[in-house]
Image 1 (cartoon, rainbow over the protein chains, first blue to last red):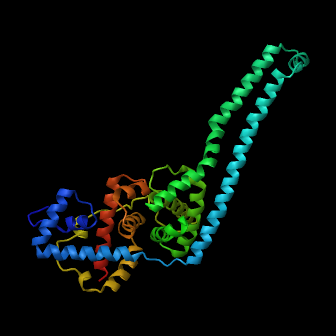
Image 2 (cartoon, chains in turn green, blue):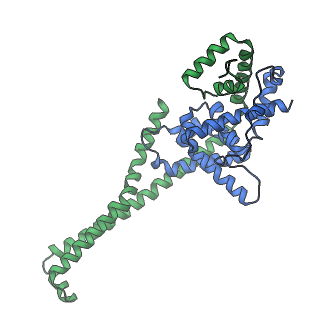
Image 3 (cartoon, helix red, strand yellow):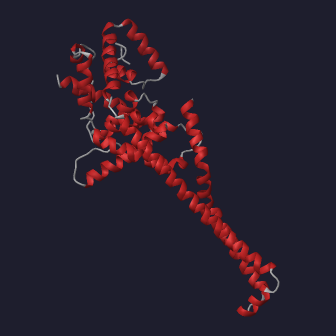
Length: 166
Length: 169
C-alpha cells in the first residue's frame, strides 16, 4: 500500500477477499478515516452486490422434477449393472472352486481325469490350484472394487445426505 | 431431493460458464446423470458441493469443446485468456465512478450484460466467488487450478469487469 493507503488495486483485492489478514486490517483502518477510499470501497461493494444477483436464473420446477426422475432411473440402472457384474464375478469364483473341489473330493474323478489326460494326478491338482488362485486374484484386483461400489452406493448416498443435513 | 436442493445453484453457475441458458439446461441434466454414474468416486468426508460443481464444470467443458470442434468460437474456462495486462490502465486512481450514479437495477442489468462478454476463466471465477460465495480453496478444487491462479483470475476478472462497465458509460 502506498502513502495514500489502499489504492484502487488494493480495494478491488479487498472486496474480493484476496488480501492477507494484516493487509485487510490496514485497508479497513484506512477506509475508516479516508472519505475518498470509503467511497471507492462502496463502489466496489455495489459491484460485488450486483455480481451476486447478476446470475439469477429461472429454472422451471417441472424441469428439476424431470431431471430428478431421470437421475433416479439412471441410478437404478447403474445399481443393476453393478449388481450384475458382481454376481457374474461371484459365480466365476464359485464355479472354479466347486470344479476343483469336485476333482479332489469325488472318489475316482481325479484318477479317471488323470488317465484321460495322461497326466499325473498331482499335476492336475496343481493346475487346478493355480487356476483357482488366478481367478481369485482377478476377482480381487479387478472385480472386487466393482462389488464394493455396488454395495457402497448406499453408504455414499448416506454421506451425501449427512452433508446436506449439516 | 439432492437434485432439487442443488440444481438452481448449478444451473446458475452453468449459465455463467456457457453463456447460454438453453445449453445450461441440457448440461444440468448431463451433470446429474454423470453424478449418478460416478457417485462411488466421491470420497466420504469430502464436501459434496465442490465435487458436484467440478462434475458440472467437466460436462460444460465437454460441450464447449464439442462446439469449438463444430467451428463455434467459444472460450473454455480452464484456458486463461492471452492478454496484455496493464493494471494502471484498468484500475486508475480512486475517485468518482460512472457507476455511482446508476440505480441498483440498472447496475445489475449492466453487470449481467458485461459479465457475459468477459473471458470464460474470469466469468467463472466471478460467478463462483460472488454468485455462489465459494471460498477460494473450494474454487481451486472445482477448477483444478492453483490457489494463486484462482486469485489472479478473480482479481483480473473484477478489474476488467469494472473497466468495461465504466468504459461503456
